[in-house]
Image (cartoon, rainbow, N blue to C red; front, top):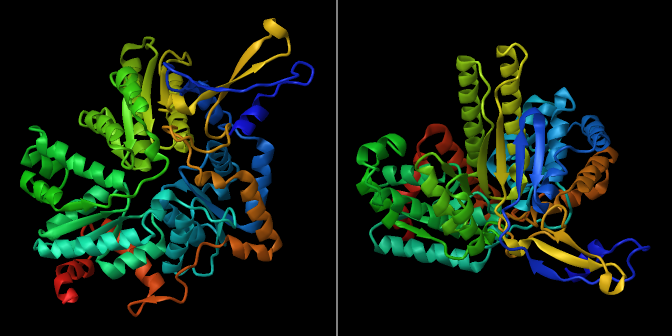
Length: 558
């Protein structure tokens, strides 16, 4: 880090004969933010936000080069929301650069990535797919393509190197398997039957091994609560083994506790807003019969420290909407959950957060437009503030949605005010809760003796910084996701065009090929839990095959 900071701080040769660097915490500063205004304006506040904002309007020459390569090779791209802003800015521009690419490029969460890959191959002429994410995502995309009869479509990773994931890896050791075995036995001793609900952000191998130990269904941060509720309804004596994400599991238990402790959550409200077959009594039983793996955390969401939480409470709680991914630590989650009870916040998946921000901006725009039409008078500027309690990379999708809404509202306002834009003065501020320990300065001095000029240059994690995550980075950027970049994407396109044999090294991990577990093909066993989830999402009920496995688990162990 020190050598990197020295390089960044070096002044020109004519003015700097020596450079000295030191790092100091920036205290009592507001969180960085990006203000999105009418007419597609972007106003970054602070160094971290500037690092994000500079790539929202990408180089047109780069976009053109990638566009031509994708069209020539009939390639598609699926990317996770957590790609860095530079890459996402280019992907959004690519989608708009040619009619064919609108449906050949998708940015989504890890589950939706596989669905988009199937759609672009079946309906839009894609013959190979680049997966921009970590290894378990490319592995999952490939498995979903194969299950849909698209075995001939190769899936390529951005780099031949391993693209790990701290959360997924926490479930790949002996500790997770031992935990499943131990908790399954405890469940039987307590006259319950175990169901393992595993987060989708895990490898296919982990899913396969887990399914061989205990009945298993995959979940996402969008459907996990409904999965738990439905399982408890269909199997009243079920014991939920949730893993590997410790924060998410603890947060789910905390969510149930808040509902149970609140007098507002009557049985009728639970039945209408959560699940038609649940009540306070059944939720209590679900909470009591749920156990969480204690050693699994995402390195990014683990970074919301106490300083971030205190700043949020003191400076942002009363005048901002709060958002939090289900994976963030408890205090940050509690803040957003409390606000969500009054529709002033949201807890959930990346898609949930994106949809919440989009909805709030749309509601404000619609309300102001209605007032404009009724009163025919100028409206006051309104700024909606959102604390982004997840990875900073998804700001690209947020900016696009907000700009689209504001653009439509301004157009409508012009039409209703005889081309005199009096209304629709709405801004959205996206606030990055970054710890002061993650934003540093380096001090440089010109060679001028005691009257030397002193300059402080900001050093921040993320796109501009390049060093990945800080251990106190708050909403920092995932170092594993950042192994995907534009140069790597261009290299993949060139290799496909040339038919380069090195492409084989870019294929997803294939650790299960030719292997079996308890006489069953390991790949089929690994995808079984995903298929159970997909059937649940389609039918709104757990598959009967899975229910039978759970209810007969005791007999299988005898």
